[in-house]
Image 1 (tube, rainbow, N blue to C red):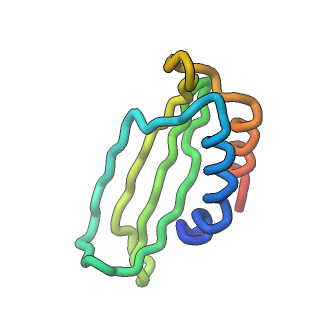
Image 2: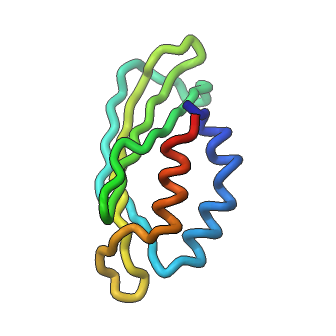
Image 3: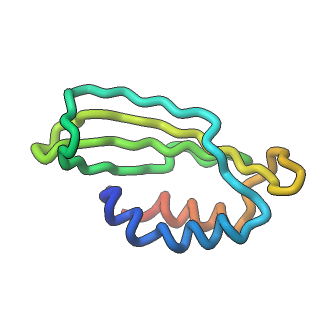
Length: 108
């Protein structure tokens, strides 16, 4: 499990470069969340992200939010579909992007 802060810091630039210069984009086509405990604005949380499913043209990310006491306070899920930038049609996940997703999926 990796904290959201660490994940974003370490990978944000690499992902932005990959996506910004790619012939495809990956919009969120479904999102859901479940809040299990109350939260306060400004409360420090730890977020973990895992790839729950890696399909032919889509992938699903699942998130868990924990408070500083380690209590699970929320869960979320987003489904992303790979779209060709010029045709705006669904495509298979390009191999280089799939390789990055697989690398993230297998990270400790």
